[in-house]
Image (cartoon, rainbow, N blue to C red):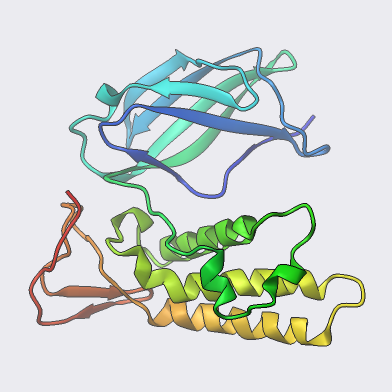
Length: 244
């Protein structure tokens, strides 16, 4: 039995807040979630061990660990933390690792289906009967944006204004919607073309967007600094606002 810890992004752990953390372990052959008989949770801040195989609080699936606010209170924001889940499944203990970012806040999307309908009013008829909205595509598109930010050296949790990613988020979501529609039986040939157009638009919007970015992690727009997704541009302007 081959097991994998399923996740899309590093964990964004908010400093000084209690939280219930989860670990979704799946059998890669069946895609089924697995239940642990017991397990331990460890947390490392760089090379410093903050929690050492602390007993998990739920066997799942998914496995759960309730982390206290005191564990991260007062710690320096960082992107080099790591968590380890030592889970016993089927009598065998396996350790699963996941990167952790200690953050001031977690990035959140700013679009809903209404924003998509302003571009294409007929989207409703492309949705399957089982789905009530396009949240799966919106969620996947937002993960894509965050992964691209990370790949370019930008931590999503330091972005101060998520609306700056709005156009790229809409375009990427529409790309996913029309890509799925193009793969259906007797699909309109235009769906494939629209998918390709929106994919290009999403990449272009992402590359060009200027980001209000908190480089030093103090919760404020950095003085005289504006960052784009692929490089840093210096502008002469005062700081505007921040997150408290």
